[in-house]
Length: 387
Image 1: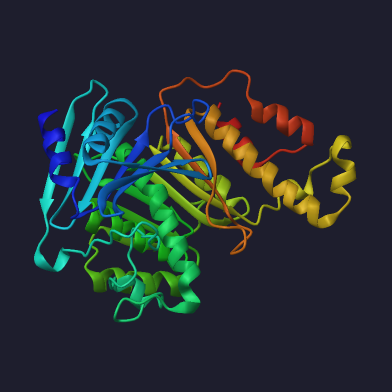
Image 2 (image 1 turned 60 degrees about the vertical axis):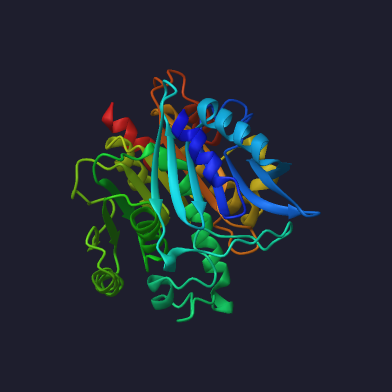
């Protein structure tokens, strides 16, 4: 407790960049606890205050507190509602981890002169990202998202936002990943690997975790290019393989499974393998959900299903609902989240599942939904074959 108090005293001043509380406890209980909180200093009418932003669903609630009030709030929140607190300040960064028994462990790292950042105290400042504008990141430069000076290429700004949004999802589940050994991550259908490199950079370079990351994709030229880039950056824990998700047998375990835009039933095979490996975290952005569209038949929905476009979109939504239900039924706390704004891509749903200790449900919602729609999905069949 003394370490936490000392950390907050050292942090809550004009040199603070931000504090993030993540790993909400009881996040599924009616959504009463914000999924995460961010704290930053603001100067209002000459007074230094600390703005607490609470993220509840799609809403953000703001509150401005004095340093003393902010310290009390953060201390109480970490002990009662969250598993981790990340501090980024001008001269140091730190992480505070809270155990189930209320013990707090603090790890602190001093910044060198090149790592020190200017802190903006304006009340209504431009949004700050995990990967900042103006700070060159090698993989973003090589992938055409940044210039050599760190400026975001205008035509690639949506990709920059997408990358940062993805890293925010990872930041929320960071407390679920092991800290005493290498974290094993499988990225199915990695493609050009914008997000794979971002994930590695964030977890290894910024968070200091030891990683074993495998990216898998069907395109050989893409795999060759990604492998060359990983070697160029010295990312020794990042490897790329050519292969099909359904046939992958390269491991018997994984701490986190990522599947972003794996087409149609490839997502089902990825989710099945993640469940079978009892992965602690699953992040999935489904794509091209055709399977249910070819089967769906429900008299109550005939008025909607007669229109091709509506049938296609409803089928995609029902596919992901079934996947979320199946993850829940296999011991995962599952959220269906908006990945990025709908205006940028229709493929904007992300399934985030975290392994829990709860028992499997005996009366699965997925079965009722599938029977109502008269469908049978690949993930249902794969899981059924295990029984």
